Amino acid sequence: MTQAEQRIYLVGAGQIARLHATVAGKLPVPVALSVADPDPGSRATFAESFPGARVHPDAATMLAEPARDDDIVVVATPPYAHAAMTALALESGRHVLCEKPLAKDFAEAESMVGLARAKGLLLADCAARFRDIATTRALRDVVPRLGPPHRMRYVHRQRRSRTAIDSDSPPWFLDRSRTGGGILMDWGPYDLTLLDDLLAPVSVEVRDAWLANPRTALNLPPGTVFDVETQVGATLVYELAGGERVHVDYEHAACTHGLERREAELDGLDGSAHWDWLAGIFGAGPPTIALGRDQAGAPATDQIEVTGVEKPYDITHKLLASFSRLVRGEVAAAPDVLLAEDALFVFGCLRAIYDCAATGTAQRVERAATTATTATAGGVR
Image (tube, rainbow, N blue to C red; front, side, top):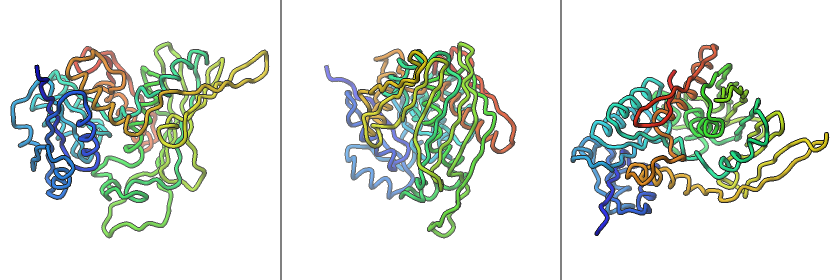
C-alpha cells in the first residue's frame, strides 16, 4: 500500500522557508509541498529551487483547499506577520510550526496559543532549534551531582554579528515595528528555551534588565530604520519545582567593544558545571563539560566529553521531523518540540525582559498547569 503524502504548506518563500523546504524533502514520508509569497521574485527563486512545489501568490488561496488531519503549515514570514498567518492557518484546520520569535508582543502570542487550544490543533515554536540537544542531555546527568543549584551565568558576546549590518540579511530586521526588537527577539528565543529546557522553572522573575546599542560606523541604505537593540542583559531568578531559586546572569551581544565570550556556568552547593552550549554545533568540537568539585578539601575538575553533537542542519531538520511525527501520531510526545503553552511561557519571559528594561520595574512570569490539547504545561503573565 502506497503511503499517503503529508502536505506541508510554507507561508513565505524566503531563505528560512527554503531551508524548511529542503528538510521537508528529506522526511521519511512522501511530502506534497506548497508555498505562498506575495513577492514574485521570491516565488520565482523558490520555484527554481523546488520545481515540484505548488506556488501561490497568497496564503489564503493556498490554504483554501480542505484540510487533512496531518497537514502542517510552516509560518516563515517576518515576525510582524506571524500572528495573522498563524491564525489563518489554524482557522483553516491545520497544525502550525511558527518561526521564532513566536510573535511581536505577548498579546499576539497569547491569542495564537488560545486559538490553537480552541481548535484542538498543535502550535509549535521554532525557538526549539536547540531544545534537547546533546549538550543539554549530558547536562541532565551532571546536574544532580552539583547539589541544590543557586547561581547560573549565560553569556554570548560577539563583537560584530548584527543582523542586516554585519550580514546580508534584509534591513527590515533593524525595524522594531516589523520585528518587535533586536538581538533579544533574534537570539533570545533560543537562549531562554535552552535555560527553560535545563532548569524547568515554575516561575521566572526579571529583577533588572538593560538594552544597549554600541555605536559603530554604519553603511546602511538611505531611509533604513534602525531602532533595535544589539546588546541585552538581565538579572533573572528561576524558581524550580523543588523550591530552589537559581539566580541567572544573562547577556547576549551582537555588538560589543569588549571581549568575545560564549559560556554557561551552573553552580550548586556540591559542584559547578561550565560549558559552551553551542560548541561542536558552531565551531570546534567536540564540546566538554568542566565539572568542578571538592576532593578531600581540595578543588578538583573533571572533563566530561559530550558525544552525538548536532550540526547546524540537524537542529533545523529535527524541528520539522519531530513535529511531523507528532502530528502523524507516531509519538505521544517530543522533547525537542516547544508546544504552544510552553512556547508562551518562554516568550513571556522574553517580553518581561523588555518590560523590565523599559519600566525599571521587576517582572514575574508564572508557569501554570493546564490540560490544553496543545501542551502539557503552560505559562501565563
